[in-house]
Length: 152
Image (cartoon, rainbow, N blue to C red):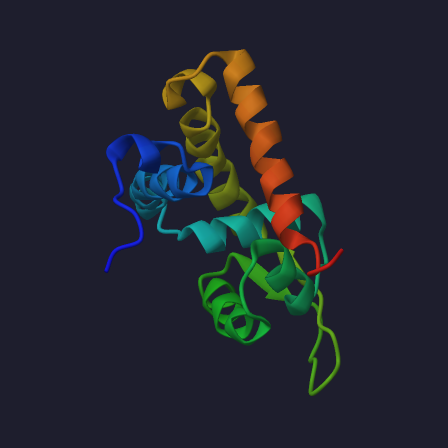
């Protein structure tokens, strides 16, 4: 037995569900944009985070781009192999190794960054500048609320 009947209007009033739908629409565009630059969204995130904070460790990068630390090693390795990043030491079990952008990495970030900025322009998202700013503020508020520990 179904407890309630869903309607289109009811679904449209669910903000988290609307956020999921918006994510999928935006993600398709981002994947196309990044494929033109031979990057994934996560790889772009790593390059951008290192531009903001040079010398982050793999663990710090994993936290900032929201992936498991175990996945970061392979991702960093692929970017090192492409000449976009360089590791700052031999590392080893339990020893943090800082990671930095190479000149080639800076160039890749700059080229992709121009397209990312255009993609994020309020008008490109069908919004006014004020609406774009409001949306960004509200999304950050949602992120903060979901990032707090339970009971916090």
